[in-house]
Length: 325
Image (tube, rainbow, N blue to C red; front, side, top):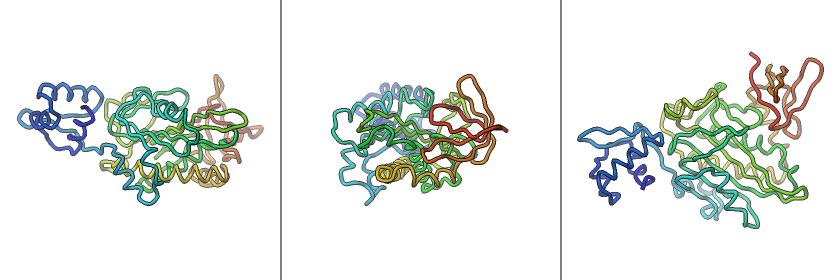
């Protein structure tokens, strides 16, 4: 019911309670109740006596047919059966992990959700995203070798997401080690890689991607770091179906190349778009804080920092990176 109501309101025009009730097969009182629920979820719905209800801004409801249409010939023939779009979930990563747990071979299964109750970012942080307004996507892929085979994968995936954003029209997006996409130093997208497997393989990876397409004012107050969304950058409503198609296409291409050649093809493009390349940074590691200059990444995707006396390589999960000024 809620998803259908959002779909009717998605054009940004006024719709009377009577009209919506007829379309949904419910009473005007029930429409009012559902509108109230949408407001509680974070959608900006305006109510005007005599005119009805309208969203503050139009939005694009996720639609599998439109995503596949945008992908065109680049869409695998069976992607329709490997692409899940759901209205609400605790976590797209968790949903996908459970869905593919009994599947023998997994190479590109996707889940997109309109809202997450327990979306997670790096270091256990909550991922804040206004419902029906952002891109929350997870992808599952199985590699034949052990976990060591996927070293650097989160960085390669970051390259894919940056390329997708650039193709949509977001210029000057940069990468922050190990798994963020920035614009003008503010967070635009984040990635989270979860690895499952034995030492001898195979290894299954669940990749979570969150892109800020549009964050409303209330949700903005819950974000504890500098951020930006695509609506602010481009000055227009974001077609999330086109965005999803671009992200999926670039991720499929990236994971296929990574399966065949590893991280090597992605080291140079990642480093060329690293926001902190050559800069002085502060590294927060546990209770300690260190200062150094970023010298790039090594063949495994480790971050190389030049300190006063020596160069040290850091790996994902070990540190938090900040500008030194």
